[in-house]
Amino acid sequence: MSPSSAFARELLFRAQNTDGGWGYFPGKQSWLEPSAYAWLALHNAPGAAPALARTLALILSWQRADGGWSPNGLVNQSTWVTSLALTVLAAARQTAGTPFQRGMDWLMGSEGVEGSWFNRVTARLGLVDPGRDISLTGWPWLAGTSSWVEPTAHALTALRKAPGRSDIAARIDTGTKQIWSLRCADGGWNYGAPNALHVNLPSYPETTALALVGLAGSSQTRLSQALEHARSLAAKPQSPMASAWLAIACRLHGIEPPQPAATPGPEADLLVTSLCAIAEPAGNWHLLGGAR
Amino acid sequence: MKLQRRDLLIAGGALSAAGIASWDNLRGPASNGRPPSPVAVIKAASYSDDLVSRIRSGIHACGLNVQGKSVLLKPNLVEFDKSTSINTDVAVLAAALEVFQSLGAASVHIAEGPGHRRDTWDIARLARYRTEIPGFDARFTDLNRDDVSSIPQFADEGEFFFPNTALRADLIVSVAKMKTHHWAGATLSMKNFFGLVPGNVYGWPKNKLHHIGIPRSIVELNRVFRRTFAIVDGIVGMEGNGPIQGKPKPAGVLVMGPDLVAVDATCCRIMGINPDKVEYITMATGLGNSHPSRVHQRAERPETLRTDFDLVDSFRHLRL
Image (cartoon, rainbow over all chains, first blue to last red; front, side):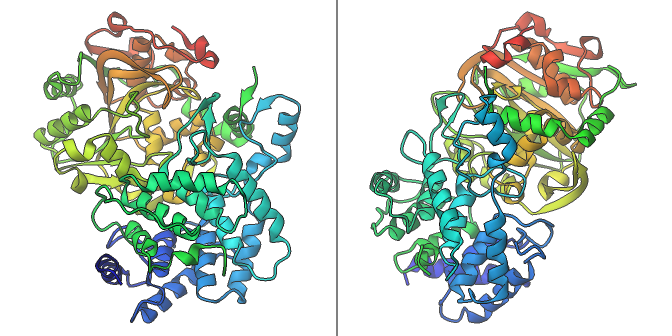
């Protein structure tokens, strides 16, 4: 374990809330997102088992009746974080359990509204320019909204961990195609709008990496060009969040990422701390990959 | 001309009868019994001018008292592109911080929740906030990753979540940028409140607001957050395909006031935009004053500083 990852893990142990979760920053409300990444960062760490068992119990307690997960204990709606919960359950070898199966059902039923019949008809009649191929539907942040790159990438990661389901291949295929269709002209990805009013928009390093995480396991030949773009981004000083995601994406695709010094981030950012620990050479980045 | 995807989303939201009914609750007569609203228009030719004294004079002209209050400065921090002027300039934000501290505020914090990028701290670094504002890191809250609480009723939603940092502030100062906007016509102090919606609940972009409808969401946000003041950075604004891809537009002004509707209407008049044609301003007449007879202009008259901002084709009809 490198000194930096040891420091990260110590910080995470100290910052765990009494309910078993983590906030985005120490002393803050527990949220599923930082809790999931902390769990992944600490998975198999010496002495971590009791802490992680409490985290898993908390995550399971946040599963809703519809099978999805809410982002924290307050929000009464299932959202994109369902994908993260499923990724954690898969890493915990709980794919055979009811929570995982119900979560998968919810995820398979979740899709962006851009592909609704109304939008398809109006686009086909030429009444609207939807600005993207709405036959390719990915995953939204929350129900009733359009699909975007990051929730789609996380959903693809989670779906690849479902054993023995015959119905997921088509959704993985469509989601993969959607991510490719939302690629920016500069070779990377932003939140999911490669242009506005027919003017190209720039990509962001962290979202470029997340798209490539979602594409891990994909056999697209054009991956090599996108990976080279990610590698070139990783070779430049980036924020800790972007550096971590770029390193995770590179490692998942079998590339050793360059390691320039990151620009300074905020102190005690628990989400980024977890991502940095996951991204370490000996970190648990593989848990975000396509294979279970 | 074909509608764009977001037009479709807005149209879809507008089909909601319940939504239309709640819009009507916000409409009202031009004055609605409110006193006239002071708006200070202060000339500032460049970011190297003495912005502290200009902001202080604008605040005094509007009669704002912040003694003992917890003040939250909410800049417009969206993305960074060094070739244009997307964000509230660091000089304006730093000056506002200094002024509110000097006026006896109990605390002055800075917070923002960008709509596109998750990496708020990196945008703050690129925009030089972290290097040029003393103690920025300790004062700043990323509203996209803050703790949240719910409020009842937002548009047609039974409950809606907002960051505790915003909900608990005694005064939120919208330190906005003067820009045209390719979906809303203009983005000024009121639209700036999109950044109060937490990404950790609603995602990036905050697509929920697009589906509710951009004008309606702007009005709803300004209905929820009423203890406010505005400082609009129009020293160098943005024209054309804003809020991100437009061109820098020097207007040489700071526009300030406690009534964000009045401030935005005044900014529009400076930009050569008819505020009576900007949908979110017309929908917000129940929240503030937009008619010139109900806006008491302090310092400069907006018509003397008018500098027409280029508008994209779909908003050319807004021209004053």
